[in-house]
Image 1 (tube, rainbow, N blue to C red):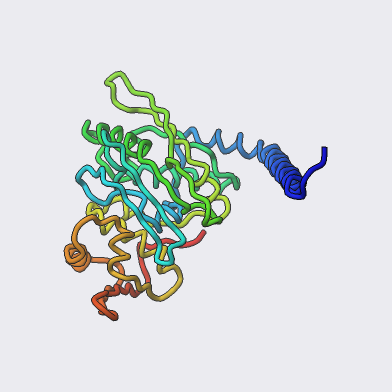
Image 2: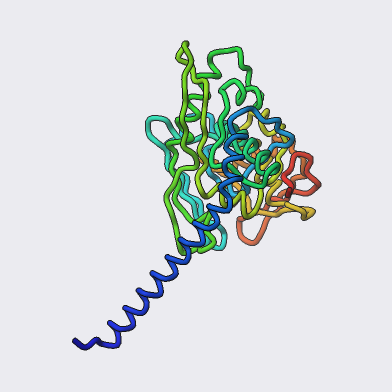
Length: 305
């Protein structure tokens, strides 16, 4: 039976694809075998409490609008598109629990910080970390002797594990998109039916980013900020400024990055009212647009490790 040129080329392409997939799989298996001792050590360190020397976060979580900045329950999706149209993110809330809030992300910041300490010590970012509700609440500055904070942490974990993401934020290939959640959890409650022991499993995207790009150091003052937009700005501006003296961004773009769902003039009013570790100025551009510039070395900013 003779083959057409197209059929022959398709066969060659399929063989090349299978070879590449096999080589990738074999390389991954070799890497996992080589890292097995480190993985075991990391998982042992992930169980007991760890002294956190510096708080850290993953840079994509700081740069893009992964959560609601409103205290009220949000079920309306966030749809973000970068200025060049190459990066996009859609955040979808669970109707019963609502979207993950920026205060809920304090739990994720704490978990990432614990994993970051382990990675700093042995060079391997663990796939999960264990901690108690008390340990977490104390670390993020919430009063631990009241029942309402144990209710809050359980509700926050519900929001964190059911908020879904779709986009290409974590991908080098901008043409590829994916749907995912950031964490999964296992919990044990005490005799009072309060959440006690927690195991947080990190999404593979967070682990790969931490391994390839490292984590960014953040100031613990972020945990104590009560205003949602300001809390967001303390990370967003810090990672955007980086080592530069200033960062300029369009006001509408900044509103989108902060997941602010109100009117632009209200967002600007709030922005003007915050006491931030940067000098903030506004400048009209061509048309009716407006830019915001943040100047000054940030005291609560993010830095490379």
